[in-house]
Amino acid sequence: MSSASASILCSVLGIVASGLCGGVAGWSVTSLLGWSGVGGALAAAVIGMLVATGAWIGLTSLLRALRLLQ
Image 1 (cartoon, rainbow, N blue to C red):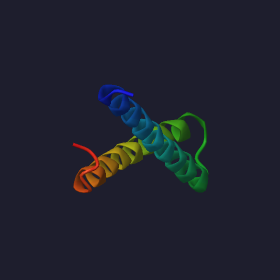
Image 2 (image 1 turned 90 degrees about the vertical axis):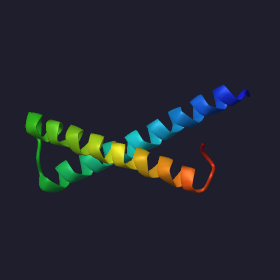
Image 3 (image 1 turned 135 degrees about the vertical axis):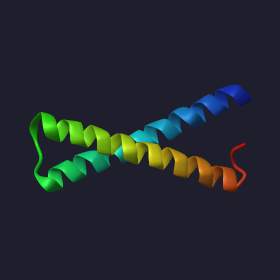
Image 4 (image 1 turned 120 degrees about the vertical axis):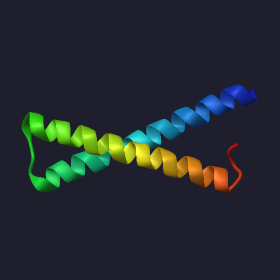
């Protein structure tokens, strides 16, 4: 596998992992609060995107600090 292909694969895996964390967090918070309908879906989407972005930033920073990512 070339370096470019490995980089793309790692990025895709990171995006999927971050999105999964965000989706679970958004669903969990809205379920815990008992929110449903359109308002619950919008809240879950916003919470999910915020958590996914934070996870992406955190994972990227960690991998850079460990010098596993340049």
